[in-house]
Image 1 (cartoon, rainbow, N blue to C red):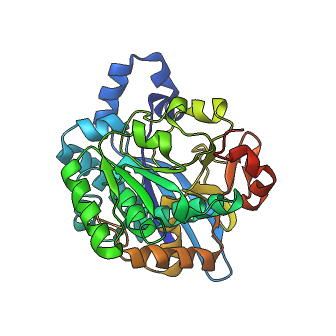
Image 2: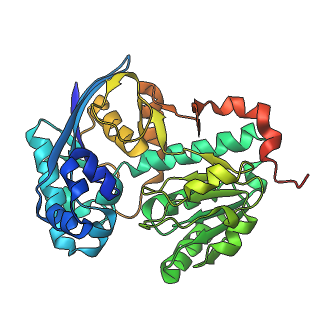
Image 3: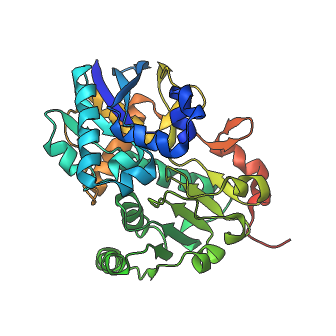
Length: 357
């Protein structure tokens, strides 16, 4: 049995207050100061992960910092807190540790953490890419549209997840726009894609125009704020929001019934898993970054797997195959009554048609 740790952090003050109810009675500014001084916190033990060919157990350890603190505080301070959380997981038996949400973004995408640890480290980004792309393919197929003919927009394309999605999709698509604030890096990515696949992608630092024309949107920015709202999207668009915190406003699902919002980075875990902690998903479900850490533990692959700003496409394929081997499954479409399989979308495909009726 493999043993893993996964590092999490609160995405908002209310997340912190659920664990520490006294924080609800204190001014937000004071709560943030307290969080800066707090050591890592053991959140829960994870049990029951089991397939026909492997099993794993693990733990959640929290770094008590909000996304804006992760990005705004001195990098050295934040990395030190993350390292201490990883060491706490190691002392609890972890043989590999996964970095969740902004703990995988700070600094150099896990490289500094890996250098400071004597156990393996992964960001989980390879499996996040694999599940996001497979979710998009299945959603396109189920709604009767060809991915190669779709106008694809990737928001946050300079990041490790966004750039890898772009590099892989450029082998399948004919029309793609990459969006990110750093145009110099974006142009380098576009040139690389041209060399590798011959596809000429569009690049821009402004998302509004491309989003209005997009049939498929993959959004994975590192913004601490919502950046995509109902009025930004084309009729019938498919949107895969992989960012945590989410890039997509909750109002999109409420007011744009013609837009298909898919959970590309959520999977069902094999066995009878108990996280002993509610992080907002139905029982038995977890984020793909968590799942990658579990899969590697089940395989006994205690190695630095997904770290750094550039992911290995072969590792994306490999971790997808290992996930299938152990019975991890895409969660499907999330609705008010739970998740619906992609195969069921065909019954309502007309609802998501981009054609004006």
